[in-house]
Image (cartoon, rainbow, N blue to C red; front, side, top):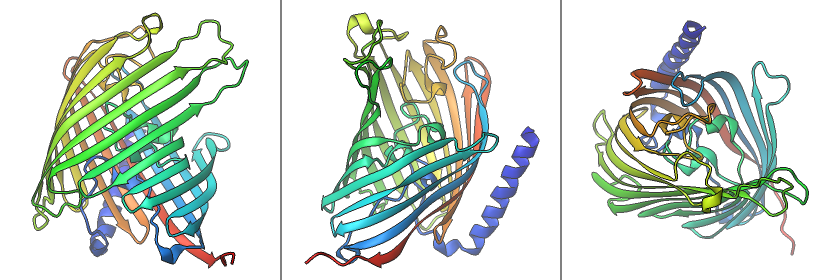
Length: 395
């Protein structure tokens, strides 16, 4: 089975590489350094020309994802699937829009649809550098959180986020501030309310986000907190719990657009964990912990290679990958306070006229267990927007 999957991945990768060679002029900029760009959702752009226009949006992805996880922290899976997000978007004016649609996700071998969620989003851009989003968020991997704080695999099982979001986009400061309300409760419900709060920042001290300077120096600052509680729940043993992660780093990038290696990035990140619950509500293995994650990224026009070293002590990430944590997902009694791990990741992506091809392979070698977990995925992505007609404004 593994050989068949690897053969399919190799065939698609080879085909994609040949196809990309024929249409190389369509790729104009290096890949996303912080995340896998082929999986990120395009954000709405505003202009007076779009005012009162109605658009049909198609956001879709067909994927193969295989995770071979044998370390004690989590378990692997294999999924052949797709998602389709058709939406209708109306631009109210040059600064705001409203869109509605549906998120459909199917997995081969699973009867019916795996997930069906409504999409509804109102966006307002009072200034060019700030956008307010209400309803369906630009969530998941779009937040660009690092993997110890946000699991890459959540793209497949926790795609939908709803709440409020404020996006900041300037040459020297990028920010994403959001609240994702995950569970709403009413009186008598036998479960708790849950929500996630996050704030992702990147400040540029030298150079800017456009990559126009040969050297860049930036400071990423990430905050993420999860909460569960509520006053209406009928649970007798109610745990009011707040878990928090923070990360601060230093990122050095060298831009060489005329070379094969377009961008080289050295990143040093420090992570923290804290259980901020009251003493009587602390039920995690550890009350606080830390992690350090230096890594190197090399990028060409279509490829990205990352390698890093993860060292942690009593680290817990409520939304992070369990491969980086000191606890296990399937065994509540398991704990390993100290972690030492080497990571290696390879990403490929190419876009052509709305269609994208992406391949990723990721490996995690635990130095203490002397064992390696790995995963890979192949993606065919289509995202585009089509103007339907202009709606006459009321006089």
